[in-house]
Image (tube, rainbow, N blue to C red; front, side, top):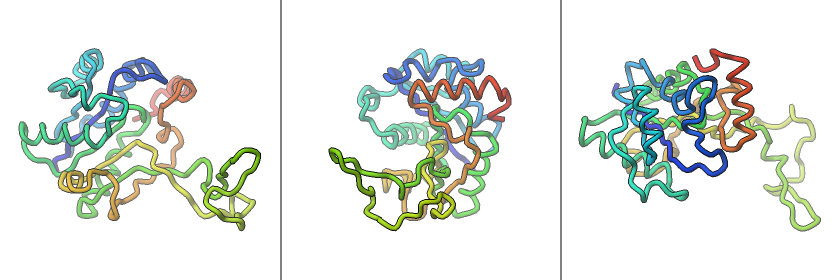
Amino acid sequence: MRILAVITARGGSKRVPGKNIRPLGGKPLIEWSIDAAKNNADISDILVSTDDPDIAEVARRAAALVPWLRPAELSTDSAASVEVCLHALDWYESARGTVDGLMLLQPTSPFRSRKTVQRGIDLFRDNSRRSVIAVSPALSHPLWCLQVNGNSIRPFIGREDVPMRSQDLPPAYVMNGAFYLIRPDELRAGRSFRNDATLPLMIEEPAECIDIDTEWDWQIAQLLAASQPGIAL
């Protein structure tokens, strides 16, 4: 099988400035995701899509493919990851041949392991190459979520018979952003990584589910990297 791994790393992060090349556990954040995809026989290349020359240089030193800087129209705050991936996919297939799957690894999930990446690939291979997305248990159950209107609150999804004990709630999961894999034709047709045939890649390990979006998330990641040196192996 031939899979293109794409790592999207735009410059100019506002909530965590310079996060993609900020040192975490002794190496730049983006290098964690590059390393998670290395030495995998199913991955043909690890392509980093970035608009930032400094990120590009760090990625190249980590042995990733950075063939160009991302166009300005795909580097805005509103640019969708799907469109960024399609841009990378179109270039790669025209330059280096077709692939069986496109894998998106977001650099904000540094602790997803090589074993998890391989589990996702195996799930993709064993199920007719359907879409695969990483999910993990929801930290806040949706049945306990509320709407606040002025001084009143009510159930967010309109249920009154919600169990009061957490062990009585049905399991609920969220997409954690750590892993996406889909066939190129499905991505082009639906312009989404998720469809009716999407399979869940279950990740139970809390550290692997971390998505660095704020300085608070960064502080937690730093503590984990310092206390568990082999966390992403």
